[in-house]
Length: 104
Image 1 (cartoon, rainbow, N blue to C red):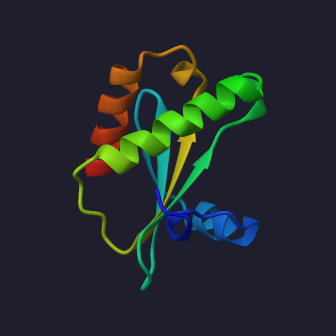
Image 2: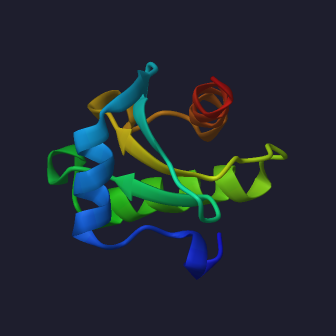
């Protein structure tokens, strides 16, 4: 995932959460917000899900899923918020779930 396609600023996260266009699945929530710019992604993982090693591993897996997916993303901002059930899940199950969530 390119750095220009990553949401990092708190005000962007707040705007997307306030708009509250939410879709959920077994392992994650997806928030979207229409923009005129190129698509961007943000990943939220709570400290309740584990230590830094666990959280960073999940972030790397989500970024890999997005990079390797052959989906064409529209001009939207996407935020993926992982649930506690995502911890310890096999990569293939997580990949299938996230891809189904992004296609909705």
